[in-house]
Image 1 (cartoon, rainbow, N blue to C red):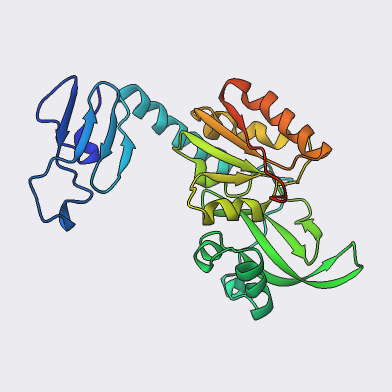
Image 2 (tube, helix red, strand yellow; image 1 turned 45 degrees about the horizontal axis):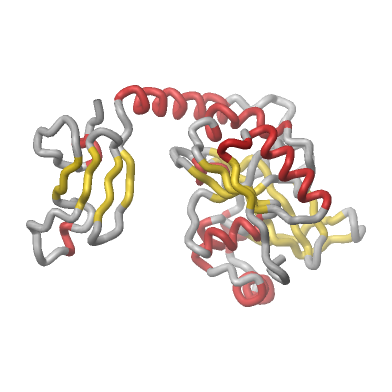
Length: 266
């Protein structure tokens, strides 16, 4: 049984079939308050509004219970970080980017300021082992359950490091909670680009085209189990292909889709 009332959907007492009802999501802005623009499939739980485009799914009791159990499991696992992992502290004062960094992100990489803010991208000076000196770095902050777990530092053009001793987790992992599909990228900027293009459930692997995906294990049940479609959008070089194949192997070929970039796209 599906509790449509919890999702503010009036099915007028019907227990099966397809019906049209008023969409409460766009009702406040509608001139015609009686227009039944929301199509509801009572059997499958799928709802779609032909006026505002709202498209959502109402789970049944079993799914609701499983979702609640997974939410509890996610919180428990997020709180139980092994003692040997370090946790960085998030400094809100560093969310103001320098003019050069903001211009590079917005104009060169086409990442709008709204996405930069949503992903909580910061900037700070950090010693980079590749150059042997302190560099001005863009900081991609890895959150889980709202808590900062790790940070990847990038100095231009391509110097990278992560917090020593911190746990590896997918970038933007909270975005796939409760979703039925997601996009997996090879880097944080690619993930930010997909978000800028309008996609919501988008993550990136933490260590580039590294085929060692042991960091996935902790998230398989709580974050990936319910995904019906997983879109893998990684580079087509040899390292990217190894990463793609290992992701497919771990996540299941039956639900994976592979993006092929056109000429000069990547």
